[in-house]
Image (cartoon, rainbow, N blue to C red; front, side):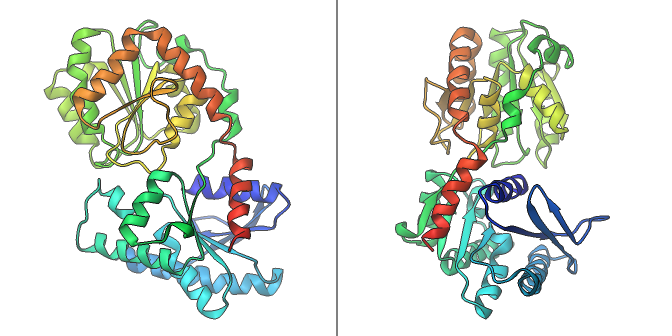
Length: 365
């Protein structure tokens, strides 16, 4: 989400707007800085062992600094919050001044919990999400699937919600890493069918589903390799399961990596699998397409993926994932065609275009 917010702000500034971004301060960071035309205001606040309480403290700091900045730069025309983390800031600002407010949902607590309605802190976060949807003048979601989800969860009227997808940085289209070299850096043979997973290792993202699909694939494609980029509470379980299934030698668990290393992993892949149980958008797909990688995604999102044209859509269970990966492993030419189609589509998801659509939403507030 941090990348989305900063890239959107930069694109809004390029369009001739004055963009200010309020965020939490980190160690050694300046309180104010202008970067790529965006005014960054880094706000200190008290930490708290209760995460929800800490977020309230952060929002209080955002609201305080909002009005301090207005005294210097003048009144803002619109405020734009992202996810439940900013809801109380929007609320407290609007209590003082009725400035138009836009709220972007990048995901929901329901979706992050793998389509489960848990109690406790999870319920508290859902309540905050509902309140954000209520007080916002307009709502943005990053996909039509997420639009339907929040309208169902929070009883939000359809007219209030607009879809503006994520964008991708143009530098992804200028990567020049040879596939042979990239595969070699992971100990993967040039002709080894290679699948890449990128994402948090949690229930929502479904890495546990993908690992269960591997044994049959390795039986049919003995040289197949599986690269795993990302970390999370399921990583240990997925690695142990790979050992139990006898496929650990076919896997490369890379953990969190730098952006340069991530680009290398995409360059090494013959396909990218996104086995999510719930996926609001799926920036991984755009990243994969930018390097002409075909994707295997689930039906739990990804409304912009056309089955059989720029990727394959499967169900979120191991046998279905195995089918999709087998189709690409056994038909590399078909996979390459889908990857080229995907790259052409990804070129339409520029941040400048995202900014234009966002400005249209602002004007309707």
